[in-house]
Image (tube, rainbow, N blue to C red; front, side):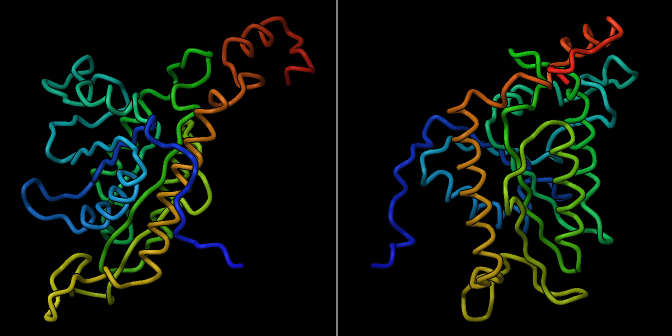
Length: 247
């Protein structure tokens, strides 16, 4: 008998938290096409019991830079320290960005730089701060570049320490040039992109793979603290003969 693909998953996700950061260039309350696709993923995660929070980065006064608090480096104001506790607490991070000139948005670049600002901090096991967390990305636009943008964003996220599961990106693009964007209302009352099987499938796969990975990481207490603890390496290296077993 074929297994029902919509049968309820036995795993629990209600102790997990997800943070969606939309890097649109549009301030609230203006509608964001990227946010419309992020809504699909948010609904899936909420339906599984995950605690979901959202931030639209452009609504906040985020200074440019690669330090945790740019007020200590010449900026008069910086809201990033107010947002950081949400980022630090989330088991799952989903970055959403539109495509502009084939690249992720300037707000997305700013987000990645501010995430990088904390990458040298450590968790309770002495690993880098993002170890044990998972991340993915959602891309929208009216020009080619979903995979190119996802490649850049996902590389950055894994480089600072996030675990990137299989199929951790999804997106929607319309025809090249000006035209309808994801979520725009169609003449028949439907929404652009909502009936696109490729987009809806990949959004679903991404959402569940992020939850599955977060579940595994939490159940295992994150990544094992062997071979990746900065203080151990520093002590061994300073001794001039790092332990071969550790290496």
